[in-house]
Every structure is written in structure tokens, then in C-alpha cells.
Image (cartoon, rainbow, N blue to C red; front, side, top):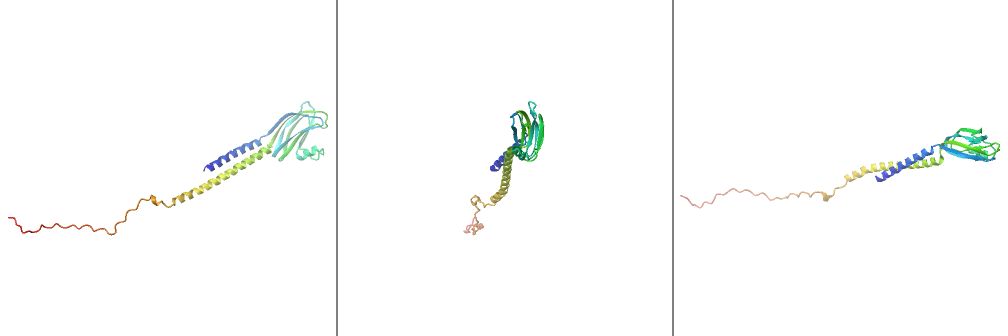
Length: 215
């Protein structure tokens, strides 16, 4: 029984921890920063999610210079880096202040790129972005912990059923066990097969006549 309680306690703890980790994995991630983009270079950061997600926020050039913002998936980012631009971006906008509201279809890595095209001078970009979606690492850890907790719940249920089935059998076997002869009271003695006959009552006899007469 103690083993059953121990398994149930560990399973409950794992399920609680897994649920909390999954809750943290689903929380949106906000990134706010000021970045310097040197002339002829670009700034990018990667977003990794599981399942569908969304990217919201804005980017602005502090000194009022115009620049370009792109959102790529993995294939589009590889195409941008090698200069072929064969894969179109998911999002592209040009200006001094750019609002981003882009869905991220499916799990994977996505890239936000800030660049000046054509390059003329350095950029000072302020970005404030929020990413909605399941974070990969936290989600995987949460799933592992939850699966372990559910497995322990199954083991605890099997152990409880086994104990429940075993208890009636043990009680039945104990009730049918032979009694200890030493614990029984001693048997009554057997009657004597040939008892002595009871004594026969004799009638009182008259005193003997000795021919004595009393006058």
C-alpha cells in the first residue's frame, strides 16, 4: 500500500510540473531592444515555434531614415542570404516606422530581417515585437514530464487492481486454513463400557426368635 501511495504522489507531482511547463511554453515572447545596423549589413533574429503562431509589433528608425523589414521562413531566409531571392518573403514593408502583424504557418524557424536597400548609412532601429506560439524546448520537456506522470498513474492503477484482487484470495485462504489441534479443548472422557451394577437395596430382617418370652 505504501508503494501505491508513493507512485500516486510522484505521478501527481509530475503532472503538475508538466502542466506548469506547458503553460510557460505557451506564453508569448516579447523582444524590445535598440539595435545598430551598419551600412551594407543587416540585422536578423530567429523565432522558433511548434505549430502555428503569430508575430506582432513594430520597428522604427530612431533618426527617421527609411529601411526594409522582411519576415522569412527557413527557405526564404536561405534564399535571401545567398542573394538569389528565389523564395518570396512572408512579409515585406519599407518605411521609417513599420507595423508587423504576420501569421506564422506551421512549426519551424522564422527570421525577422531589418536592412537598408540600397545601403547608404548606418541604421539605429528600435524594435518591439511579440511572438505567439509554443516554444519548442519547453514544449518537449513538458510532454516528456506529462507522459511520465501518466505512465505512473497507469502503474498505480494496475497496482491497486492487483492488490484489490489479491486481498479476497488471501482472506479466503486464511479462513479455510486447518485449525490448530492444540488450541481445541480436551475431549470428554469416553463412558465406561461395563459399569458396575448399582447396589441392590435389602429389606430389613426381623431379629432372630430366641424363644424368650416376656411376661
